[in-house]
Length: 159
Image 1 (cartoon, helix red, strand yellow):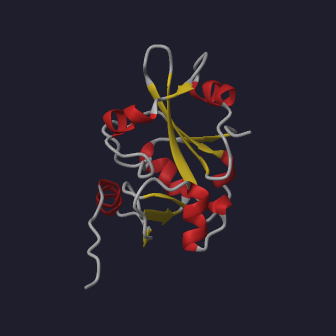
Image 2 (cartoon, rainbow, N blue to C red; image 1 turned 30 degrees about the vertical axis):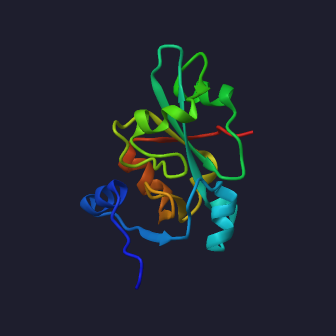
Image 3 (cartoon, helix red, strand yellow; image 1 turned 135 degrees about the vertical axis):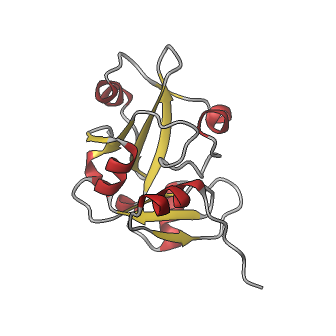
């Protein structure tokens, strides 16, 4: 019997916005890092992005979308977000803050739309892949459409 795939909030939001996107599914139990996900799907890791959540001293959250094989540069992130300093939120806080679980955090459809910055490497690409809001689900779409949908901006945020 074929496994039934459930729509996520991210998919529903994209459908209601009338934006073009594709969904890709892959087998995944526990947390799987993004480079492994890219490999499972036969994708170039430079086209697969992860969604990371940070906070400032006042516990205000900021979201960053970066290629899976790269690391955030927190100083660049703080500057891009207009903050003095930022740090990653603790893994145990991901669900409480975003509504998503680790490995399934999408920049679309969080509990609240936080200020979001997408790494500038995505801007010239026709399509990028990112979590569809659940482990085992990736969304493929145009990064400019993503930026406009979530009110994000592009900036240099990796090292």
